[in-house]
Length: 362
Image (cartoon, rainbow, N blue to C red; front, side, top):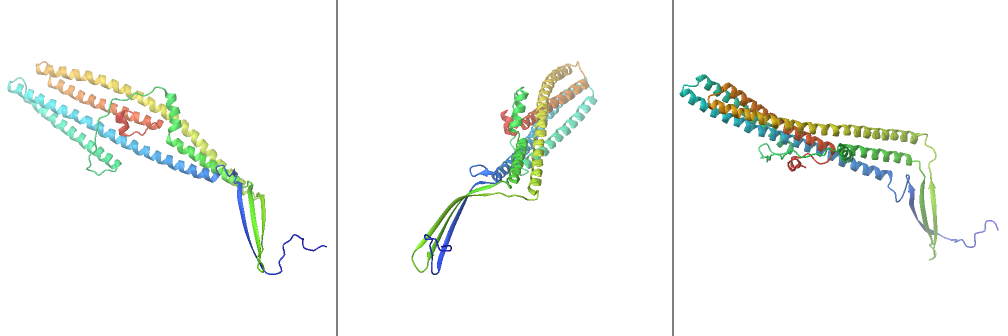
């Protein structure tokens, strides 16, 4: 009758012991199936990528600083022989003038003027050497070398050729520039954070299994009970907290996307400017080289006329000064072109602008 025990039920008339084991295997949790990447995993990957690209940005900045210092040392190093050449030419001219004075075809004031010019030229040489040493010490500091360590200085090759296909350069820059890669990783991070907030109110589906055992302590019989099922859990209401957090994360994601778009536009303009600066620098080098060659021919002609007594010392001194000025200008515009090339490499993200890549012309 009612209240009677089930005929299949297990009963015990004395003390008993029981144990249970429960297992739960989440199948769908936080908006993702077990085989999919979770929002938390996506955040971790995005943070690692962001850190990696930020490190690349820092490395490129350091490499660019080293490259600029190296160019500065090479530039001033190339000007020093120009000053030495001027000094040597003035010495030869002074010897010629002294011979003319002895032959009474020149006056002593010419020698005095040349000696003053020699003093000024030696002063300019010493100033150039001090500038070289100062920039070289800065290069050692940037490289982390002791102040007295030797830095191997090798001259740069001829200026390399650069493609005129600006559209390809822009595409390459947009794909490889590490500053953009940092911003892209920030977008992935913001997107993963938004997913995490949105998934807080998503359902959880799990596969559950349980085993229960009971042992009649007065006997030796053990009885086991098993159960298998699927559970579904879903939050119902949180006073709008989740919605507010999701809205804030969505705004952050939108800001990150806008920041990337702005950076892409700025980079496109930088690539165009860097390419134009490179082409302008090449034109300046060609112009300065032609101007230098013409001035050097004029100086040699004037020197021959002075030796023949058909020109004046003032004219030669003026020509020597012009040769020095234009030879230094040629050096300066050449290194200006190398700096423009380095900036173009840096902007496109093609390679690190180290002096090794510059020496290779890559």
